[in-house]
Image (cartoon, rainbow, N blue to C red; front, side, top):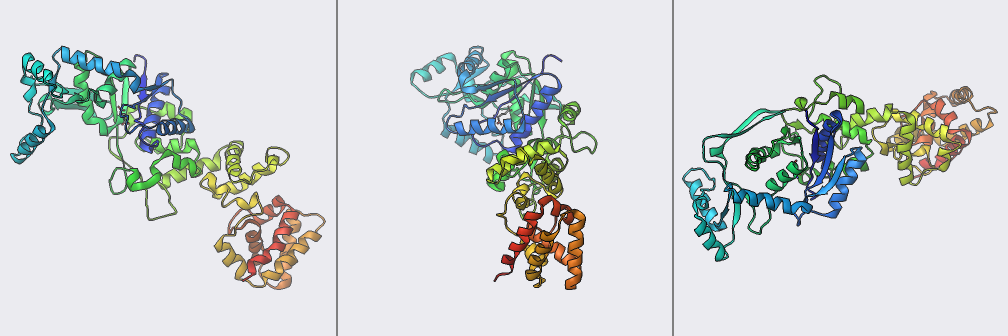
Length: 493
Ligand code: GLU
């Protein structure tokens, strides 16, 4: 294979969508696998819809995901001259022509064709204009578009798609499409291809929504005498009702930024997105970077549409459960130092970070994360569910309050008493704390679980968590005693 050169060419008209991110990821994997180049090209030709914010958001999102590119960002608007030159070349060679038909004329012909159940393609009126007629119309200042002249002969625009196999479309089924608007601006279809030729793109990996563009672009490649790249079209991503996922109907869960804000680990999101449209051919779901690059092939991109399994009506699954599960997997198994760095940012954002966690309390900090991460799904859980480990200012879960504290009114007095017992212990160890708690339960005549679970609620605010006796020593006598004494507040009202 000659040098692999692929591109990610987003139109900067919004945030980085997870579908766009998936396209970028698959191109990136392919480039890395073949020691090729990934080119970032911003398709900003639509000046009205392109924004600087969007450009920054896209670059930021790619960087956060860990996708690096080798060339660019290039900006399509910097190459307008190339696009115009290509259109002029086609005109000069008679492979394109000026079309003076007005919108109204086109519209009424369309309606007539529809009514007669005929083909609604452009009827080629201006194809037949003589050079003199064209010159005359131009001298009268009649606006025109430039249309590509689809070859007259019988033939097909065809190519071998790496994913879908042979794709062909008869010339007769393709209308003379517009390549330059009446305001002189070349259309996306032409700009995109001229840029691909200039950037020596070897493989175009993009969504199936571009399939009809591709057959028309094949004609343009041929007309311009350029080599046709390899095409690989990825499936679309649909929701459970088979509708395309979009911001309008699904809200911000389609934006990469949402996952960042929701405490996703970048690689976990990347891992999830790859599986939305590609499969390794076995049931492996978790991949390291090296494994993914090794396993990735264009041929294993799925043909059929991928389902983004999101149930709006189930708040527990604030996005596709598979995404959450993959994130939880990384959260629970990544080296604890790496988790430590990620959680540090979360704690800093919540203003509950202490510099000692990077100093003399580092061991305690990492051990805390290790003790609690088994139940967590996102990095946000460390500052919500895990908050009590890092600050005294935490809320108690309603379930913990009702079930572990208020259900046994005696606890209002017992917890401060238990605090005294703990305080009096010379050595506050797992064993001595356990013994004291059990003796205490015996004396007041309840099962040991009652004061022990109440301690958990008062100390961590939660119903569940790591083993209570480990927790006692991990939190330390002083904190345990203080929180048990303070627990009286939960019984007020
Ligand atoms: N700017 C196009 C898009 O965002 C890129 C299409 C392509 O990959 O050729 O859909």
